[in-house]
Amino acid sequence: MFLYYAMSYYRGNVARSRNSWGPMSMSMDFHRLDPDPHYAEECTERMLSAQMRQLDPLKEDLAEWLNKTLGICFLTGENLLSELDNGVILCHLAHVIHDQAVKMVDAGLAKGPPPKIQGKCFERAMRRSFFSRDNMENFIKFCRSLGVHQNLLFESDDLVLHNQPRNVILCLLEVARLAHNKYRIEPPGLVQLEKEIAEEERNNSADSGLGSLLSWQFQATPPRIMTNRMRHSR
Image 1 (cartoon, rainbow, N blue to C red):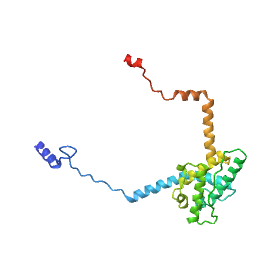
Image 2 (image 1 turned 45 degrees about the horizontal axis):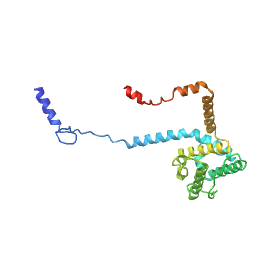
Image 3 (image 1 turned 180 degrees about the vertical axis):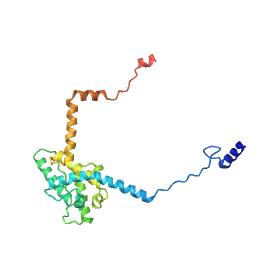
Image 4 (image 1 turned 120 degrees about the horizontal axis):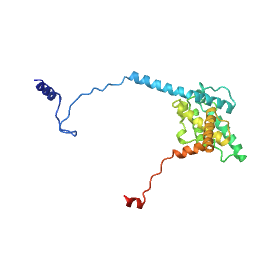
């Protein structure tokens, strides 16, 4: 009797249909849970907040570097983006790097030509105005002339509208690194630390016999080449 009811229940809940999966398939209704929009928004806000906190030490380091390089004293990590978003300070930075590059090239201490400055700097550009975007475009062109890779360049609205602060920070760090390597402008602390670590690792690998031994030991084993004699022996 139990077997009869079991088979009846099975027949009632299994639909036989001919499709691409075979002569018989089971029809099951799966209820997909719709995501809570409030929860998704909260997760997005938390993620963005965490990313902004990670940028804080970079912004502080850049603010200190810009103060020293430009001879000013009002930039901080908190006001960095709001002070830069009209492009005026960045235009001044471009002129400082350009002037130092000209001196280095004329003295034969750097390879030319120096990076180009294009366009006019609108000193009284209002925030989020067309003039501020013109300043930003001119600075981006300067960055490209300096040698900043295309992948590290930011777009005007990334800074004018604060759309992508991370892109701006990474680009400015690359500008500082290139200005130091090419024209001996004092770099930010993080760039200097990165250089010292790279030099230390390079010296250790060059001077240490153990380093060379380990580097040899962990090299990938070259592929074994089978000769005609080995083929015939098989």
